[in-house]
Length: 246
Image (tube, rainbow, N blue to C red; front, side, top):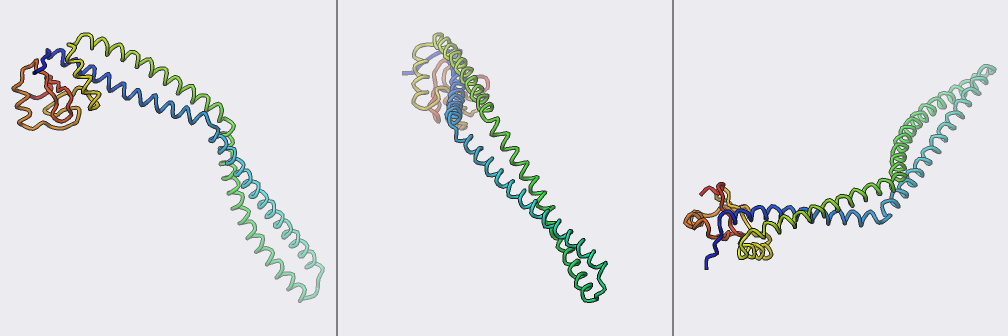
């Protein structure tokens, strides 16, 4: 038995399809928001920030001690050079003077090496300090940021639920204007196959993106405007409009 409904009634199913598609998106948005809320309810991230801040602090302290040690070694070497220079002034012993000069050269070379190491350590300390400060800021602001994120997600859920309520009302209004058999068929196909209606555009069914064969298109052309057709690919109600390309 062929089900018949006016072309206008069939076209209204596209409005229902749009509402149902939007409702699916909203359902995913709500589910994602609840997932984020569940994650926000744990302190795992905060504990990670605490541990990471402690690790950066330890690393900063270690580099600071290294810088202090290098600075101390440089001061000792410079003090030793100054001491040797004083000894040179009062010495007349050629062997001692040669020995002192060798020691001074060795100390000057050591100072150059220590200063290079100190510069590298200072640069590393600055880099570590920047990372440490960033982690401390994230740690100290964590609870405020989390509260803002929670409020944002709750607002998103509330807005989504309000829109879903509007969709339910709009859907019911359209359903009440459609023939009962047409509406029941739409609901049945939607429950079985995930989509209840498919618009035919330029020979392509929107539910699956498949182009109908020439023979299938000929059958569609031969059907009466009020005849309810089924999409051969998606099993949804096939909606013909001016965009169908028939």
